[in-house]
Image 1 (cartoon, rainbow, N blue to C red):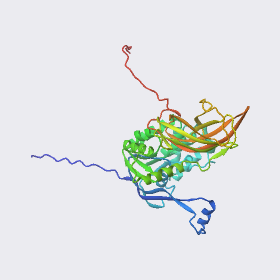
Image 2 (cartoon, one colour; image 1 turned 135 degrees about the vertical axis):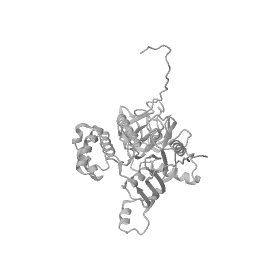
Image 3 (tube, rainbow, N blue to C red; image 1 turned 45 degrees about the vertical axis):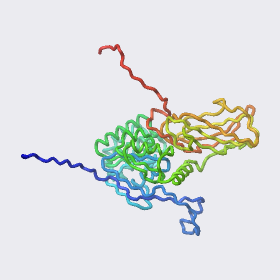
Image 4 (cartoon, rainbow, N blue to C red; image 1 turned 60 degrees about the vertical axis):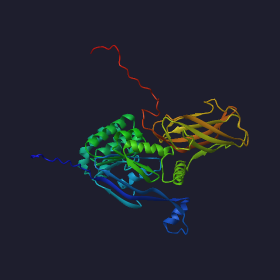
Length: 434
């Protein structure tokens, strides 16, 4: 045998940066504002509220040096769990442990004083993180260089565009030497060049062994940057694993093919999701001579859905009842982004469809079927029934921002929509010698 040495390999396991054990977050939902007031003073003799579980017994562990993504449908608890990790919210029950200095970029403008200028807000945020004025002064040039908003740093942040806001907020978040960086969807409002700059910074952070946790509807980003992914649905952790595994599971959730514990539970979750995505404070106006009575989306399988896979076919359904004669009704829809920019839309006049009149008592079903080419993200759907009476334009019924529609994508190109380009690269037979 001789003096042969035994080589023992010891695999180091990184220590937890964030541990969440049995976390529950419950909100009381009141039908009437006065019930909330009575409950606050203990005057309600009857139960005037319903319990909503934003998180229900969630357990997860994020280790130091990991880049972790959290994905799920709207209302699944993604932002809630980030707020609990950062201390913005307290859990109803459960335990949260964080080991390391956290820097968070959550809701746009969180932690900023609207009346202060950019530089004053840098000092405000730095002080909140425990830095002295001298330490912040040393970091200031690097922060301002990264933000790159010019003389606007001397203006009140209430005058900033959303893009400038996120530039300054992210510049502060990454330059205060965090050990844990937490980012919600805020980056989606920045321009594509700034986003590329931020993701390059993510790469640097990964190499430095820092911990990154972020939420995004852009599955291509999740797939590219994450070591592990957690999948949430209606406050419950469905699973954790590699980006590919969890993205595939997420897609099954969206099309109703995920194996939940039981069909009744699945139906309840889908119904709850549908209700949450309907705007309770929808704005509407019009003469109501023609009225939109029902509206919903279906996916390529014909199943009602509020999350559509990019590149797939979907259908918008509208049911309209006529209360009076309408000579030439025009049915329309449009999608806006979260900032209110109208992205796309069409109507039956443009499409040269249904050019007949509507008669009193008549009910019609209108469908618009098309391919989803919008980039991954959240969009607001608006609907309308209009027309012309002689030369006068008439609005019969308009509904603004009625549905919150999520587009799920694993490949986002530049801009608002994907041109679905087909790429070919061929070697030339003849080429010049350089």
